[in-house]
Every structure is written in C-alpha cells, then in structure tokens.
Image (cartoon, rainbow over all chains, first blue to last red; front, side, top):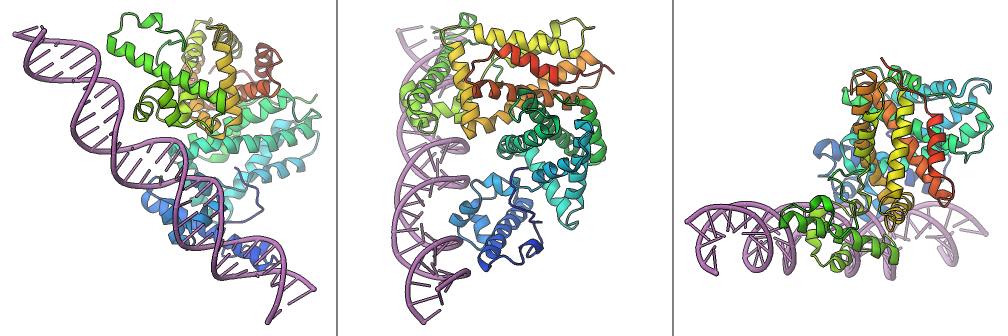
Length: 216
Length: 216
DNA sequence: CATGAAATGAAAGTAACTGTCAAAAAGTAG
DNA sequence: CTACTTTTTGACAGTTACTTTCATTTCATG
C-alpha cells in the first residue's frame, strides 16, 4: 500500500505504459522488476529471513549497492504495491451525494477485485505471499505502519474533498486511520483463515462495522 | 502500549511493588530502569539516531550484550509502556448494559488521565517524548505496529466478553484494530499541535467518530 | 563522435543484532 | 563460613542490513 510509482504490473516483461519511455527509464523499470522477482523467488524457496540482500543482488544480476538504491530497505522490496492511489482515484469517481462509507465500500471492493484479477498468473499469488509476509514477518509488518500512514494521508485528502472538511481535521484523520487499521485486520483475518473466505464479503462486513463519516 | 511486565513506574529508585522480591529480581529491575533512563537521557541530548546501543550501555554501566538481553531491539527500550493491560481492566469494571463505545470512552479517558498524572516529575515528559519519537522516528513508529497488534488482541478479549461475541469474530477484531488506528492518530494529531489541545477532549471526539460495536 | 549527465559497481565503514563461552554474582545446603 | 548449583553478566567474534565515496560504465544529445 505504499508506493505510487505508476501502474507497473509487476511481472510483465516490459509494461505497456512504459513503451515510449527512454531506454534509460525502461532499463530502470526492468532492474526494479528483476530485483522484485528475484526477491519473491528466493523468499518462496528459503523464507524471508534466510534471504540476504546479497543473494537477491546475485540472482537479479545487479550489485548489492543497486538493490539499496532501488529500495531503501529489504522490507520495501516486498511491501511495495500500487493500489492505494487507485483507491483514491476510484473514490473521486463516486457521486458526491453518496454516503462516504458507501463510496469507500465501492472503491475498496473495486480496487481489491482489480488487484486479484490483475495478471492472473502471478498477481494473486504474489499478493497472498505479500499479505502472508505482513502477518508473519515482524519486520515487514512493522514497516506496514509507514504504508498505513501514507495511504491514510491519501485517504484524508479524498475524504476531505468529499465531506467538505479540512484535510487536517481530527475527524478526517481519525476516520482514515481507523479505516486503515480495520482493513489491515481484515486482510490478516483472511490469511488467518487460509484465504478460504470471500475477501469481498469480508470487506463488506468490515465496512458494516465502521461508522459513516458525516459531512460537515 | 506494549509491555505488560507489571506495574513498574519507571523512575522511582526501587518500586514499592518489588520490595519483597529477591535481590536478584530487584537488581534486574534496577538495570532495566538504568538502561531506560540512560536511553532517554541520551536521546534528549543527541536525538534517537545518534544514540548508539554502545553509548547506552556505557552510561547505564552494563555491557552491550546486557542491553540486548533486556530489550530485543533498540526501539523497544523507548516503546515499552504499561497502560494497555490497564485499559483492559478498566473496561471490565464498567456495567454490562452500557454501550460498548461508552465503556471504551470511559476506560481510555481514565487510563490516559492516569498515565499523565502518574509520577508528575517525569511521567508526562517521558510520555510526550515517547509519542514524539513514535511520530518522528520511522523505526520507532514502525515497531508500533507490534504494539497495536498486542493491544488489539487484549481489546478483542475484553470486547468479546462485553458483546457476547467470539474473540475471533471478524467484527470484533476489525473494531478493535480500527480503534487502535484511530487512537494512534489521535495521539499523533495531539503532538502535531504541540500538545496544546486537551487530549481528553480529542479522545472524546475520536470516539464520537467511531461506531458502537453492537451486541450479538 | 564527443561531451555531459545519470546509473552502476567495488570497497570500506557503521551499527544493530546473534551466539558462544568463561567468569562473576546470587541463592542454597551443609 | 564453605562448597556447590544456578543465574546473570561481559568479552569476543560473526552476520547482515544499510551508508558513503569514488571511479567506471552507460545512455542521451548536439
């Protein structure tokens, strides 16, 4: 839920959106993906802790320095995803008169569907692995707080716009971060149950628990 | 919001509750507090990042190994507090027919008052420093996720009891973690505004934003 | 192709943590 | 007090994530 470096769809050799970028930019995306793929592969083989940055660098055929240039921390290689700016955008599409909670319901459901449907070969698997790591590896879960903050800020913007409140209102910020915590727990609940239950239904139930954020 | 190793009130030379403990246990508490005090002092002087574990060990007059034996990570030296089991207890004291949200309001307000009133010489200062570090130092803020999880679990227990739901209900877990996120943001909002506003009033407003958790 | 800018890799350094083991301190029994 | 057991400690060496610096390579542009 952290990064917002565009629409890179992970595994595809060279993303469509990058076609017209200079060779330089395209290469950068490629190494970025190479590092990510190497990381996921190694983690699947050996687990997170056993995987060192050096191994990642080797498999991705770059130097360790380069790995750190692309990702400030090991956890970030895993944690990066691109769907939260998506939520923000989807939220804006909803009619202004709709209750905020229902707009959120719609936007989050949609984003989640897209995340799961996206690149069906690896997309879902990677997402599951990611959430599993969030739940199981303390370092990764820890770093989640950063993501939550960032995503929460984004949500504050969108919520403020919708409700006519200030972006910095206590109510807006509290609502956004409360929602973040709630959604995170929903994900954890989901993987706790081995992803057997329907995540969209779980999201619905989560939003049913939440209050609506009234307009000002 | 993490530890629950009893009622040690930090600075008091030797806490009353420990009077009758063996010399061994008393000494352990003493070094624990020595490490904490050294850490806070150094952080006040130099900031968090500039303070190394070696310096902490030196000032506390123990070896670095000992520091790591007492606190698994540097962040934990700072993050430890004792108030979340308190909230759980306070929650149980409330009448069973009271709406859950109002019980929470009361319990959290009370816990916060106690935290601020407690050992007025250093209690409040340390609490402010702690929250400030949570907001400002990524590593500390990150580690907060762990605390939130632990405190959230505690809250789940209490909430389940109150509402006749299962401790593991999605609704209970989502409500608890949502509340954690919301309260955390309240704290951040508070220090963002240099702690000028009345924290109890902010907590009230936060709970006003939250829904009630209905009984089953 | 030449020139400038950006990306890379090599290498050395820092600091947080881990594990091991022998020495010191505390508790216990005689 | 002495001897013996158990717990706690410190010294030391090792691992790994991350930083910084600098020379080299790689791309973009005129």
